Image 1 (cartoon, helix red, strand yellow):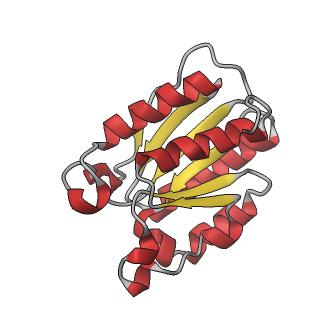
Image 2 (cartoon, rainbow, N blue to C red):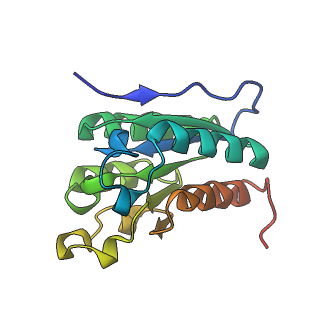
Length: 170
């Protein structure tokens, strides 16, 4: 059984400015799992911050989380198709531990190009265990933001808004 959680999108947003915030395995445990590493914010609170900030940027933010690799791939495929039809802008993606192991996610992101996928991580994976230092996602991502907590998600949303011309770069 899938543990996917999908949040309602903001009403009244324009087509083509839809952004998916996609979270991978164990991120449903935010706020209770290793708060010294991941912080005290829950997944629901993180998603609410992303939706609120995205709305201020002119984006319609939708959120999903799954502990299952195939479900994450299905989300990427669906958003790739939506991007090709002009109905989606990009994806902010925290693949969790799949970052370090999943060639399938690498291939899925490569397969949905030119959909911009921005990799984010709450913690600085390079300051942690050596097995976390390699990312299969980074080589095919539009960019990576690592170690800035929830602010990394907000910066990724800002980058997607810049790409869409909704905001000017500083």
